[in-house]
Image (cartoon, rainbow, N blue to C red; front, top):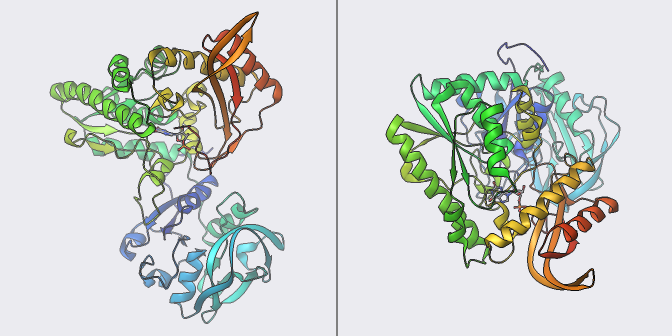
Amino acid sequence: MSSTNAPVTSTIVILDFGSQYTQLIARRIREFNVFSVVLPCTAGLEKILALKPKGIVLSGGPSSVYDDAAPKADPAVLATGLPTLGICYGLQFMAHHLGGKVVAAAAREYGHAEVEIVDPAAIFHGLPETLAVWMSHADHAETLPDGFKVTARTANAVAGIADEARKMWAVQFHPEVAHTKHGMALLKNFAVDICGATQDWTPEHFIASTVAKIKEQVGPTGHAICGLSGGVDSSVAAVLVARAIGDRLTCIFVNNGVLRKDEFAKVQKTMREELHLNVVAVDASERFLSKLAGVTDPEVKRKAIGGEFIAVFDDEAAKLVAGTGVDWLVQGTLYPDVIESASVHGPSHVIKSHHNVGGLPEDMKLKLIEPLRDLFKDEVRRIGRDLQMPEEILERQPFPGPGLAVRILGEVTPERVAILQEADAICVEEIKKAGLYRRVWQSFAVLLPVKSVGVMGDQRTYAYTCAIRAVESEDGMTADWAALPYEVLRSISSRIVSEVRGINRVVYDITSKPPGTIEWE
Ligand code: XMP
C-alpha cells in the first residue's frame, strides 16, 4: 500500500445502464488501485467531464437498445475522444448509436460461455486465445459501425468489437464477474495501459479524502450520532467520522435483546477502550422482547424490531439533539445494502427491500453521512486495517440488524434467545478453533421450533432442533453452502447437544442462495 497522500490523479467513470454488476466493475478497477466511480447513465456530459476521467466504461443493463424504457445516455458520451469500454449493453449502446445494427441474437446466451479472440486488440493483451467468460444477453451486434472490427466471438455471436483509432473497445461478456477468468486483466489493460490511469488509489487516499469531506460537511461545530451494531460496517464508519470531528460524534449502541452471548458488554468495551469512541449504551432488551411476544411471522418480527429500534434511537437522539444540536446521522451502509434496497446511482433493478437503508426516522430531520456507501465489505475491511482497527472487529462475520430474532423460527421468547445464544457461541468457537471463521462468510446456529425425541444417558429427551448454517460468499448477494469438514460438524453437534439444555438434535443446512436466503427469516 502506498504511503503517499498525494491527490488521486486518475479517475475512470462508469456509466450505469442498470446492470446488477455495475458497482462490481468499479470495485474491480479499485482492486488494482485505480480510482473509479459510478454515475447514472443519465449524468450529463458536463458532470462526467468535471471528474476529469481518464476513460469511460459503459456498463451492462437489463434492456434492449430498442426498448422504450431503455436507459438513455447522451450519445455525446461516445464523442469525448476518451478511451471508452462498453460492456454487454454498453457494447450494444455503442454499436447502435455509432451507426451499427443490434438485433435479437439467434441464441440467447446466459451463463458460462467460451470466447475466441479473433483479433488480439490491445484490450486482450496478455490474455489466452480462448476465454471462459460469463454472458448474459439476448441481443447482439449484427452490423458494426464504420471503423469497427470484430475482436472476439462465441459460437453464436460477436463477443468483442473495437475501433482502436477512436479508442473504443467493447465486449459482450462481463469481465467484472468472478466467473470470467482473466476479466481483471482485461479491465486493467483498459484502465492502466489504454487509459494511462495511475494506480494510486489506496485505502489511505480514501481515508484522507473521506475525513476531509466529513470535516467540511459537518463544519467546525456540528454534531453527529451513529448507531453502532458492533459489526465492521458501523464501526469503520464511526471511526472515520470520529477522525474528522472527534468527540462531536456520539455513538449509540442498543441492546435489542437478540444480540449474541455477552455481546452487549464486549462491544461496549472494544468501542470505548480500543476505538476510543464516545458511546452511549442503552439496554432496551425488555422493550424489544415485549414487542416480539406472540409474533411468529418473519416480516412482522423484522418490522417490530426495526420500529422499536427507531423508537429507542429516536429517544436517545432526542436527548442529545436537545442538548447539543445534533444534525447528522452516520450510517455504515455498504453498496450491497443499497443495491438490495433501492436504486441510487442509476437504474439498477431493485431486488428486495431490507437491511440498514430506508428505515430512518423521518421526523428526526437528520442529514445522512454514509462514508461506505460505494464500497463492498472486503474494501471496508481494507480501510479498517489502514485505520489500525482490531482484527477482531474487521474479521467479524456479518450479523443481521434483527439479530437472533430472524434465527429463532416461530415466537422469540427470552428462553429461546438464551438457548440460541449458547448454541451460537459454541458454533462460533468451534469454527474459529478449526481456523474457518475467516474462510466462511457466515456460520451460525438457527433454532427451530420443532421438538423431537432423543435419549441422553438413560433419559428420554424431548427438545428443540438446531440447524447449523455456514455459507461462502463474496458479498452476501449470492452464496454457496460451505462444505464444512465432518469433524467440525461433529464437534459442533456433540457440544451443542451435550452443553445446551433445550436442544437435542442438530442438522446442517445445505441450501445455497439462490434459491435460499442466508438467514432463515
Ligand atoms: P439474506 O438472508 O437476505 O442475507 O440472504 C444477506 C446478508 O444480509 C444479512 N442480513 C441483514 N443485515 N439487517 C442487516 O443489517 C437485516 O435486516 C438483514 N437481513 C439479512 C445477512 O446476515 C446476510 O449477510
